[in-house]
Length: 336
Image 1 (cartoon, helix red, strand yellow):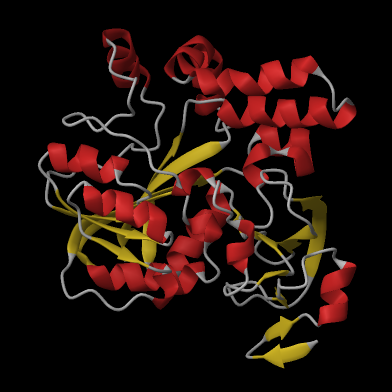
Image 2: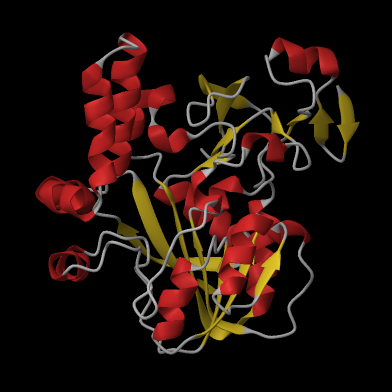
């Protein structure tokens, strides 16, 4: 291994031993919280989302408990695991007014969305102002917030998705947050839905976001919850594991530690009232046992029903949410 600033770059022979493509460079990285070396192996898994080659290990820091994918593809090589069909980079149609997905405009659907609040857009109580969304995709959330009176701006790694957001009329910067130029304007609210777990350098990214927020401003982020029952049940078949693109696997406690190191104080944790991860994970498990299982397809198809599925599962999701056991969480934080 070659050493570069406490990062070990895996040699080609070691990469092939992991079964990854020849073009994918791996790196061995320490805990980003500066803990003493020494990790516990949690599991080894593979890319189940797109079935791309490679085996990847999740380790747990013995000192702070933060779990991370290690070794991992370098930032330059990670694009291999975001193919063209990667869902969040696809263009999503939005309405002219409401900013919701096309086909989701029925009265029952709108009422269900208001009542059960299962989306990640659970925001701190702040009046409309200036908003930045990191990982804005094709602009659906930007469109929604603009309709509520916010002045919005986005950041997006995928040029294809960013172009779709720009066609809606919103300013979007393209590229990785870690390497983005400093912003001269400051924001009342910065959001990132299922973004932080993808970042190679989350502490440095959080510090950068802290420089962009106004005094008293807020950060709202959502991530998978690795403390949930789902993770313990399904392990490497947990849908939200998503190796290797998910580089960190947070619990409420370890997310608070990372936020603190990045200059933020966690104010609230909201456990999302949805069971999408659970049913996709169950589908993975059934398919692994029997690749031709029709039950696997039927179970995995449940979340595709959208609002109807989430309404049907809401009583159980509500209970698990109150126990802190759903697979996704949204946190609010303020600059320290």
